Image (cartoon, rainbow, N blue to C red):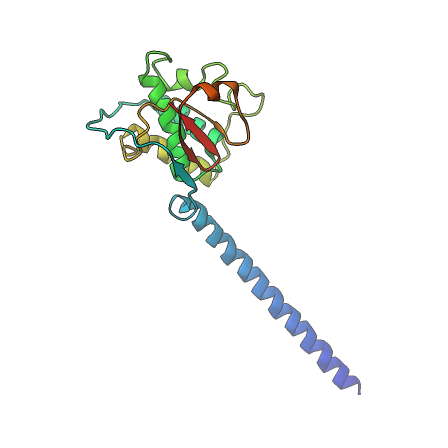
Length: 188
């Protein structure tokens, strides 16, 4: 009689251990799968509504950028759009570049990014040091891509403003909305 109970007990322990092994294995495989989805979110998870026909670009000049330029652009992409798709991150970066090219804004990337009251993360009292995570690495890569002219497939030449879709700033009523990409609405 005792032997039968011991066998049932041992079978239960083995079943629990096998179950825990599958759970742990599934956790690590699932974690890696989730990372791959995040890295491919521009293809798999982009939510875009374009309202703008725009003109086609005919040529582009590559900007010679310093390490500071890359860092400032990457930080703005990271702090403004880290949770957005890659196309959303590119759009945020292109707004900065459009402002640099405009006579109405400062002439350098860092001056545009750090201009008072322009981007919500600047001077918000929180740390401006990105975490060393996948979003920061992607932001750095996209900043370099923008500066090398690899974002030209997005026609955002006159887009200078954007805001999150959960706010309605007073200035947005005076601007022409051209696109909604993820949770940002963009304006000329």
